[in-house]
Image 1 (cartoon, rainbow, N blue to C red):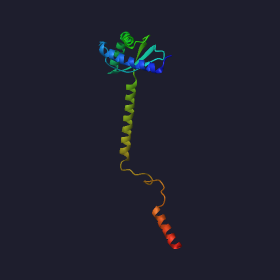
Image 2 (tube, rainbow, N blue to C red; image 1 turned 120 degrees about the vertical axis):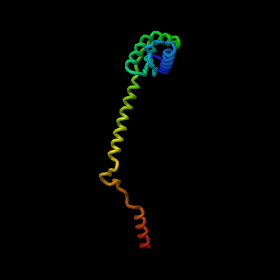
Image 3 (cartoon, helix red, strand yellow; image 1 turned 135 degrees about the horizontal axis):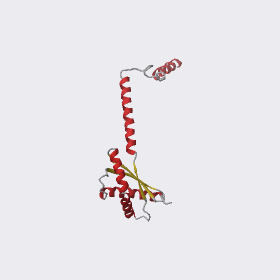
Image 4 (cartoon, rainbow, N blue to C red; image 1 turned 30 degrees about the horizontal axis):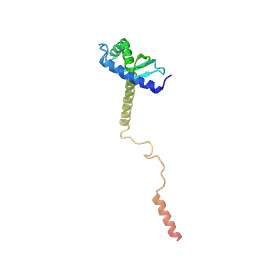
Length: 156
């Protein structure tokens, strides 16, 4: 087992190397607009998981996944050359679920905003079922102070 900090540094370096290599060296026409979002390395530095997103529809995602699989050897050799580690980690590409999750959250927030607007529209011009202020309040402090002054004048 190695140090977690070393694994994280290697993962960061792999992310940069893969992104630059995809941008500069890989000329596969199937490769769409790919963004490398994260990389993670196992504790023994033998396997690296590279997360990516693809801008486009499902067809573009499938084509980019196939292009990444076919370019895996070139990418691994470039990672080995630029990192200088004794054993170059094997690369596994995983489509990042973050954009889908973010889209789901945005849809839920839009539904909540619409429901809030509907409730606001229905409640316009309505009054509360009970008093406007349902909380008990102490009697006026001015009345108590006046009562104390009256008692003081009669006692003296």
